[in-house]
Image (cartoon, rainbow, N blue to C red; front, side, top):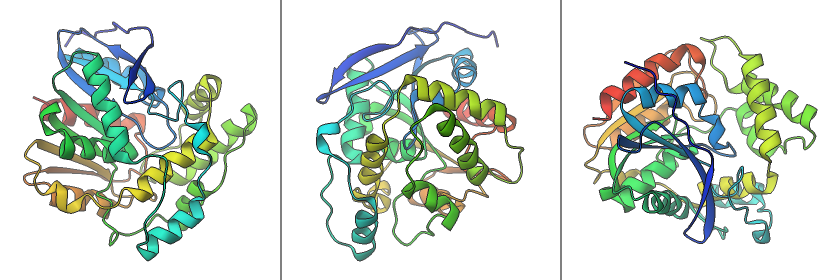
Amino acid sequence: MNEIRLHSDPARVNVNGVEIVYDTFGESSAAPMLLIMGLGEQMIGWDEDFCTQLASHGYWVIRFDNRDVGLSTRLDEAGVPDILALFQAQTQGKPMQVPYTLHDMADDAVGLLDALDVESAHVVGISMGGMIAQEMVIHHPERVRTLTSIMSSTGNPDLPPPSNEAMSILVTPFPTDREGYIENAIHTWKILSGPGFPIEEVRIKERAGRAFDRGLSLAGTARQLAAILASGSRKERLRSVTQKTLVIHGDADPLVPVECGRDTAASIPGAELLIIEGMGHDLPLAVIPRVIEAITLHAV
């Protein structure tokens, strides 16, 4: 397969009351593939080489900053949610008041497809992005050709929680100076990475530096986490999904335990499940060829 390096400049579109920043890889005449990133992560979390390789398999790859992260709209007027109080409310089954939900974020993604004149796309979501992708296929099934949910969850409250160390990442503010942020990123990925693959410190530092330079929002990450907590379970609604679905998960994920991936696959009729041994809550370079092969065999 010839490698395609066509990479657009970042652009902005107004959708669903917010401004979304995106870029693309490959030819716009190819089959669209929408990549949705996870909690607090910017679109550059999808490595350019990863996107280029997908494009070389015949896709028009679209990645974007979710609302409240990167260069997309930040809803700072909504304030900073009390995450510990929201965790407590979730445990007690109490209603939560939050600025927006994952459904709203799925509507953002659909709005981006509208702006690009894309009727439907292969949708790939990682972590929170997988949850958003699930909301897309539930509420906008005609816009999703195939679904790939990576290291994500149905939101089923009966599933195992994160490990204590992984939970600490969610509730501890990250440093706001560049050096501190980069060092904290190394600490974070040492916790989240699985035992089957070495820690890629050079790659982590480079990505963290780029993310810092594009712009961070501690409050925005908190609002995204609030959206996850308030959105509840998708398990029963996923039973009506008819789109071809692939679920990918690491068996050593400390943040979203592997049982969450198994539950996702069990909830969607006919879903295929790929468990990667030794992988945590990340996509190390060594597994990317396998993940790309799985996605491209699936998204047809």
